Amino acid sequence: MSIGIIGAGAIGSNVARLLARSRISATIANSRGPESLAALVGELGPSIKAGTAREAASADIVLVALRWVDLEKALGSLPAWNGRIVIDGTNPVAFLEPDSPDAKDPNNPLAAYGIKAIELGGRHSSEVFRGFVPGARVVKAFNHLDANVLSKPPELGGQRTLFYSGDDTDAKAEVRKIIEQTGCFPVDLGVLDVGGPLASLPFGSLAAINLVKI
Image 1 (cartoon, one colour):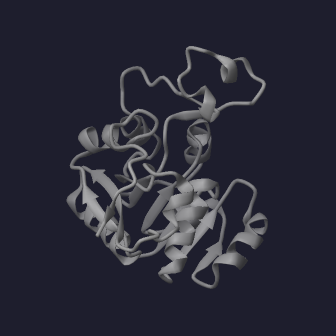
Image 2 (spheres, rainbow, N blue to C red):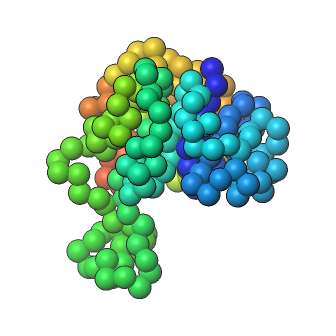
């Protein structure tokens, strides 16, 4: 199945590196256009090509790796999803300007990391995300680790563990195949309402847990 990546920041680019390492083809896109990704695709080799957001979104499986604040605008202009698989690789955090009041807020436990949690009114992030991609089969994956760890093999061998969750069994099976093809070890956390909150940064109990299967 064809793979598209929307977002070429830390998560999107490192998932592309992970795929490229296993020679898995994908199209990656950002808001600035394919030309701005020339250096990245040059680094990654022939299996990864740059495209427009619409081109990436037309793939059979689409990873969304955008900042939370950009989701509604970026996804709202794309064609209907019509049952295609969308991987939610997002986390509900806002990135702070170093000199902003939020970055110095003593009540923000994440200020030292340059981020703050976005209030979702009691809903978990994948529940909200589903509303941005109506008609898609959503699987949560690739979001729970430090993005820079994603593309690197474990130093002492073994398989890096990647969590995933979703409500559609067939969609989860396809995402599991991708994880396995990259040499990582997939762990199914169940349905979105269970697995989504567990693996979502910043407060999920499995967020930032870097496990290696020996």
